[in-house]
Image (cartoon, rainbow, N blue to C red; front, side, top):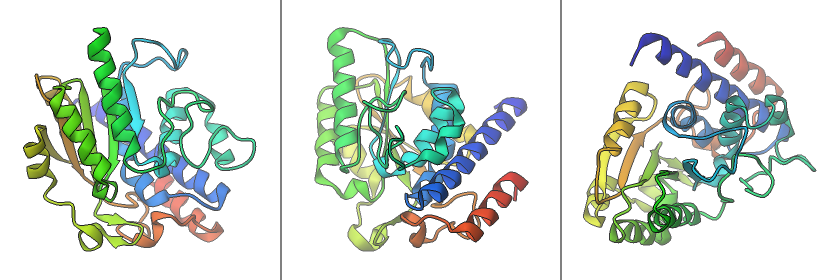
Length: 275
């Protein structure tokens, strides 16, 4: 990737992470760990990959995105704000009444949200339905969804994968955020869903594995996905929970805990200082 573009994407992703910390700190609740792990992927999707129009969020020809791991809404809101769907100043209203930034995405309240999510497993199912609708309507838009690694323990996720392969939904890209931790501890110890690659291939997916924080690898994966015909694509993104904030990285406690004032100050200093 061209150096200037790479630097821009890194700066945007860093600002998305700042938004995650600002939002969860202001709310005194939320899910910063998994939000930080998907910041780079969300940044690439909204600033490079997807055909969207913030001035017309419901544009019929837009690409669709579904955050199946809906608890990571802080990162979703932060990237939507950076992309221009609403003012970044709203980030600190997260989870406050009557903010339109609820604890989980609500398509009836928040500009740019294509699907209300929160119950794990439902998002990927909706995304598969959207992709089938595009096929039926003979539309060219593509559908993207991010699924949590813990979420992939849900049986409905695999039903949706079976559905997507059966209908040859080559306009669907499923991104597995593989950060290895869920609310109760290491994913492999709670209910091990691995190997994702072999399972997804057996279900009929084209599978790509990447470092979910490397923009060159992310770009190559999405470019490859567009060449795949007759089957959906799954991108297994190996990420770090809490990425970008030293004391949050790979720490399960930050799955659903908000930073206090001191932790907030340290996290913001690290992010804005480039540490």
